[in-house]
Amino acid sequence: VAGRPVVVVVRSPDHAAELAGIARFVREQGAVLVGVQRGADALLEAGLKPDVVVLDGRMDEVEAPSARSLKAARDVVLRVDRGAGRTSDERFERLGVRPLTCETGASPEDVALLLADRGQASVVVGVGLHATLEEFLDRQRPGLASTYLTRLTVGERLVDARTLPVLYSGRVR
Image (cartoon, rainbow, N blue to C red; front, top):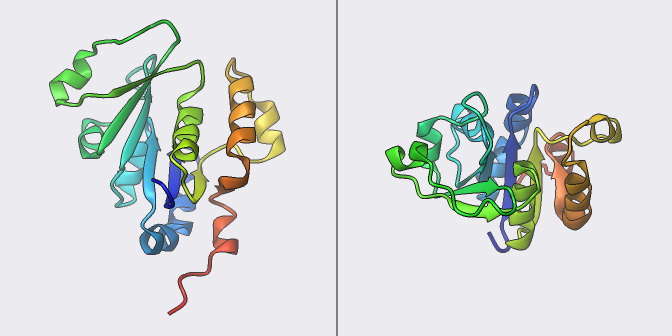
């Protein structure tokens, strides 16, 4: 991850259009692709292979990515609540996937952003993330403080996928 761009994908109503808008950037820059839960399936649907999949230990079957995307990823990171310790999940055992565990109160989306930041990514591109002030403030969930602190931490590295086509016109030939 160090020195490379990272694209964090969260499934949203606009994720397909956002992925299409940054396809050239992903291809030319060799970005590391991180799918958050069903965001991993969104990457596969766009013809891209997730390098990392970040999951929530409390996810239900609706939020869970497909077995195909879990097997395609190089690493799977399972976010568990503090104090939960190591969990054995037969979903992963059946697939032959051994997830790395991250014990935190942060959301899976925040974990993905923090992993990219701590891995010293050159830039972190968010696909499907809540980017506007209105979207950010209207979210009613317990992890809002975590999201706020994560955005402050990642701050200068984070670029929204809707903005990237304006900033990146392609590699000079």
